Length: 226
Image (spheres, one colour):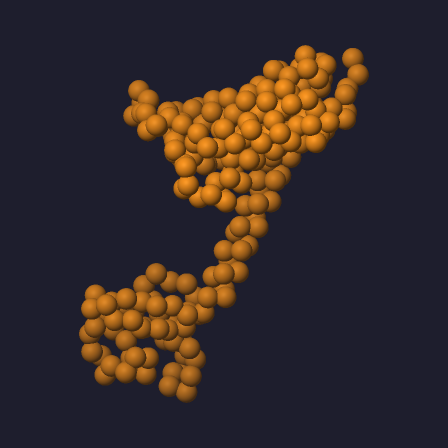
């Protein structure tokens, strides 16, 4: 039994489109038409059936967009329809199992997130594409490796961007109980401290704690409670 390398590559791209569409749509549309697929139903364990991250919008658009784009990958539209539908079935099964295991919605579970989403479509489309057992195994392995690498890459980029924004944000506004705005310059992020900028008034970046500040910062006499 030989492997169908080109078909495998085309199908993996199709699966990536099917599984990635709900994520992209969520980033673009936000909460617009974001109705949970489970309608808030709670399972016997007291946890959501699928969770709020699985929506009618994501499922429907995944199937529609994948069906439309399948011919661009030299695949029949029926393959796109079947592949996307079964990828969503696999995704829902993954979400159902993660809720039972007490994973939060949109949390990652390596293996559980990738295998059903690729195995179910490959099995459903095997006759359409002429896949054999080796082809199906190859689809699952390639999709697994690619999805894990992509997810970790995106997470690393997001983390780097958050760190950059934190470093770039050199000032902060703190609201006291009397709704008084005061501004300091952050040297280090700390939940209960505001550090003033180094100046001729300070020997060092002495922390100014909430509830007390210096007149050099906002013009209130030293030691006065606010």
